[in-house]
Length: 228
Image (cartoon, rainbow, N blue to C red; front, side, top):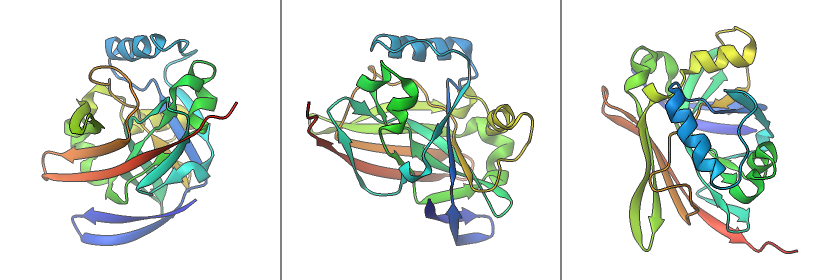
């Protein structure tokens, strides 16, 4: 999948074209066991079975990546999840923000299939991972949804609550510090405030408190009829 990013770095802004042919969703990526258990219980309330291992790495078709501002889903039971998105391009790692949009009804049957059923929106902006790796734990991910005509904070938490990209990459590559060229990985999410639920609008952010900058992306959800 060919996607482009505007990379803001200490050297200025530049365009980066990336060909992502391997897409990985790192699930159950919390650093704190209690936080993982909370998310497992959230999903268990929806009838979703406990994971077989922690973390788990789901391969998703790379053509599911999109930078569009509107996505289409089948049925009313899907929802977004804000995650950092780390990808390899030109021999370097970059970080952006993505939504692991997932069909919750299908998730009760198969987590892997539910993740494949929905596209994965990703922002058009990115940072060099090397510039934020030293203070990675201070970065904050958050998301907002529209409910009853109001913008509501849906998720928020520091990346200190999640495994680092280096840890997740090593777990996927059997110890290597670098993702293979053309690979991208979402790196886990934080709990939903008020419970997991669908929304017609989803906004996600990655906040860098040291440099006072934000990666942000919003998308609208169009629900297609679920025909039996």
